[in-house]
Length: 169
Image: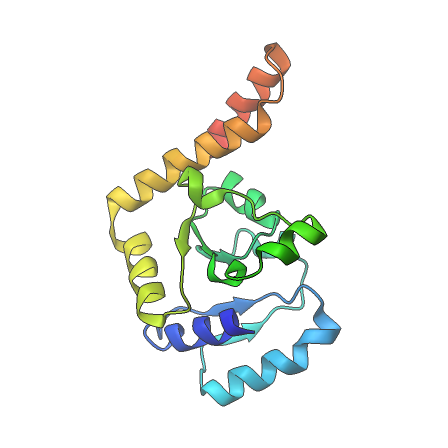
């Protein structure tokens, strides 16, 4: 919930952009998200009912915690921001449940937000939209991430797959 509040607060700085919220558990979360949007007074946020696949080409930036959907976004050359603060103080829970955040930010494939700070998120978004260096670094990080995670064994089929991914990215 805190990441939704953070995104809604940040969207006030981007009135010509639309935040599309895709609930993981639609029926359980839609009422909560509708209330958060209303309380925040944000008019440029909507809740998506459609499958994630249909959203892939419509959006030009994504946010995630540790969703594997981020892989699909990266393959389509979409920049993203990973909320790392969600994991603060939850190491024991992550170890107990076996939940491990994907190392997107460690590879430089996504930008990371360490704290629930609207100004920091705003700066990240601005750097994605306005800094060629940030975009180049994200492109390099995505290629490295996809190469390392796709390259399970050496060999011609793997190399062909990696080359095909690189053409997409």
